[in-house]
Amino acid sequence: MGSPFLNLTTRLEPASASRGQVSARRHRGYFSTEASQLCELSLSSEPNYSARELSAASWPDFERLFSKHGGVGGCWCMYYQRPRGGTMKELTLSERRAKNKRDKKSLVDQDRSHGVLLYDGGNPIGWCAYGLKQEFPRIDNGRNYKRLDMLDEPEKLWRITCFFVDRDYRKKGVANIALKAALDSIKEHGGGVVEAYPVTQKSAKMWSKWSNWFWFGTESMFERENFKVVGPMGPHHLLVRRTIKP
Image 1 (cartoon, rainbow, N blue to C red):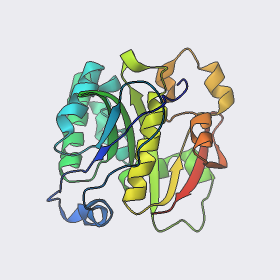
Image 2 (cartoon, rainbow, N blue to C red):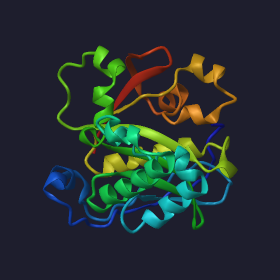
Image 3 (spheres, one colour):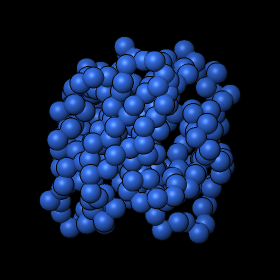
Image 4 (cartoon, rainbow, N blue to C red):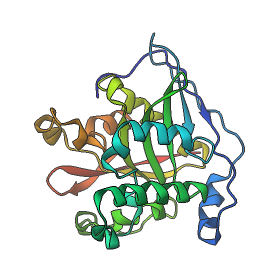
């Protein structure tokens, strides 16, 4: 992902208030906060970047970033928000892409899908998906996660699941900046235990030519942000955690 930029000023704009449904009430208890300002990140002489939370207001920017890259494999960052594949297997590729986009928009409108968008001026260039544990049920259903047999789960558990960077901005540290913005946002929302599933350093070296394999981020990214390894998740990924204080 390259080294982070220096002298970067990152500002997080608040997500818009959601009318939501009954199933979203638990989320609103954590997410409907007053407008919050992120700490300034002193990271370089590059142009100033800004970050916004995904919301109904910022959806057009999310749509623009993902549409430029084919919905990023047609997933629209929905994979881990579904408990399992289900009826998706019966759909054509174009139908699957359309359903993913439609379902993502519906979750955003209900305040049930979160993340931060990173901008260069008014241009969305990066994305980091994060949210409460219940937003990503597919993680719990994964066999590698189940094998860890986690006990004494914290009441408030956050997950960081996916990164994406515009093809024109790769290998410039954008994912590192998006991670910092997501952690600052979690802090503003009250903090808690944060977990992620990065690619191990060994696997990252093997896959260095294929950037699409790094949607979980890399071990070194999270190590720099003081995450600690909890255990392996298969041969290529780790479960890492860190506690963020409000």
